[in-house]
Length: 277
Length: 277
Image 1 (tube, rainbow over the protein chains, first blue to last red):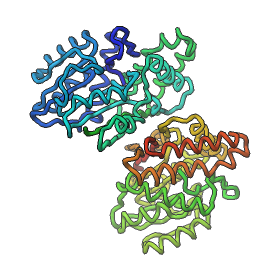
Image 2 (cartoon, chains in turn red, cyan):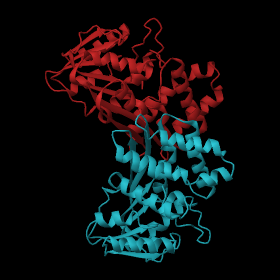
Image 3 (cartoon, rainbow over the protein chains, first blue to last red):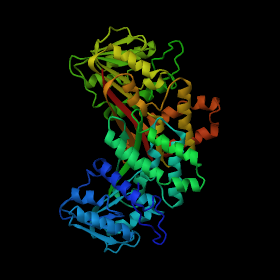
Image 4 (cartoon, rainbow over the protein chains, first blue to last red):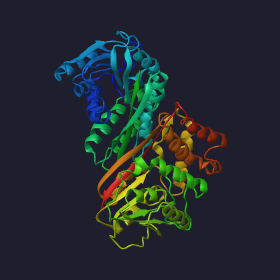
C-alpha cells in the first residue's frame, strides 16, 4: 500500500504518497491497525537470517522483529532519510537484532543464497519491474528459503453507500501510481508474478479488511486514517493534473468519509503470498 | 447469489437467473463448492426450530439439515415447482426433519415468535423491499432467537487479467437484477439493513472466495461453474436489451474464462450476517 519504494531510479524516486510527516503518521496508523490481519502469522525461527526489503520508516520492521525475537533482520531501503527514521524506531523499541542498510533491490550487496527468508511488504506496487525484483531476491535466498510478499489492491475497495465520486477519486490514485511506474492493482496478480519468477509452492491468502460500526477501531484506524487518508494525500496532484475537478474531488473524499459513518461499510483486500526457492 | 426468490409479486416472479435445468445444476455446483466457506459455521442445536426462507430447489436445505441433524427445519418458497424439487432432494438425502411449505415472506403463515432461528440465503438480493422482509421475519422469531443472512455482492468481483468487457458483462447482470427489482450489491449493506430492521448484536463476516491455479477445484467449481455460468446465463437478455452488443458480450465471457486459466486469478466476496431479536 505505501512504504517508500526502492526505485529502479534512485535519482528520481516517484513514491506516489510522498515523504511528509503526515505520510509517516499514516504509515504508522496503517501498520498498527493491520498488524494482526497481515503480520500475525509471519514468524521466523530463532537463528534465521531474514532480509526485509524496502523497510521505509520501519513501520513493518518493528512488528516483524517483535514477532520473531530470535531471528536476525537485515532491513534495506533506497532512501537514507527513511532508514535513519527506521533506525530510531528500532532503537526505541529495543530491537537489537535488526541491521539497516542502504541498498537497491536491483543491485543487492549480498552474497548469493545468504538469507533464509525474504520479506517484501508494500514495495512491489511501486516498481516498474516487480517480476525482475522477485528474480533479484531469489538470488540471495537459500534453496528451500521462503519469500513473503504482501500487497494491497486498490481495485478491491468498495463501500456503502456507493459513491461514483469516491470511486473516481480512488481511480485517480491508481492512475497516478501507474504514471509513477507502479501498479496499485498488483495484489490480485501476486500468484502469477511469483510463479513466473520461479518460486515454488506459491500460496496466496487474501486478507480482507471489512469495517462497519460494530468495529469502531477498524473504522477509524483503517477506513479513515489509512485508506481515506491515503486517497486524500494525492488530492492536490489529482486536481492539478485535471484528473478530477476540485468539487468532484471533495465529493469523493466526502463519499469515503460517509462510508465510515454508523450506517456505512467499507471493504479492502490485501494479498499475502508465500513461495519457496 | 441465486436461489429462486420469494417475490413480493407471486404472479410475476422476476428471478433474474431463470428456472432452467442448467440453472438448477449451477445452483447445486454453487452450493457444493461453497458449503465449507459459507455454511460450515451454521450449526443449530438439537431441538431448535429453524425457518429457512426461500429454499428454492433445496440446494442449501440439504447442507443446513445435514449440518444440524437434531434441529427441525421448515423450508419455505413462493414457487411450488421449486419446492417439489427440494422435497425430492431432501428425501434422497434421507433428511427426515425438514418440512416444506408454500409461503410468501411478506405473508408468513406462522404464529408470532414460533422459531428459534431464521436462515435466509441468496434471497434478499432479489427482493424490492429487503428491509420489510427482515422486519416480517422478526415477527416469527422468538426473543433471543437469531437470524442468519447470506448474500453475495457482484461489485466485489475482480480478476486478473483485468478485462473491461468482463467488467461490463458483470455490470449487465447488476443492471438486469436491478430492473427486476433486486440489488446484487446487497452484501456490503447487510449490516445497516439488519440494524435498521431492529436486530441486535449484528455481526457481519465477509467470506471471500479467491481462486488461482493452486486451487483447481475452486477455479472450476466457483470461477467457471458458479460465477461465470451465472453471468453467461443473462447473455441473451443483456444482448437483446442492447446493454452490450454480441461481440462485446462474447469478449466479456472470454475475459471471465481467461481469469480461470493457469496464470489468472479471481475474487468474489459473500457476506454472512447474524443478528438477534
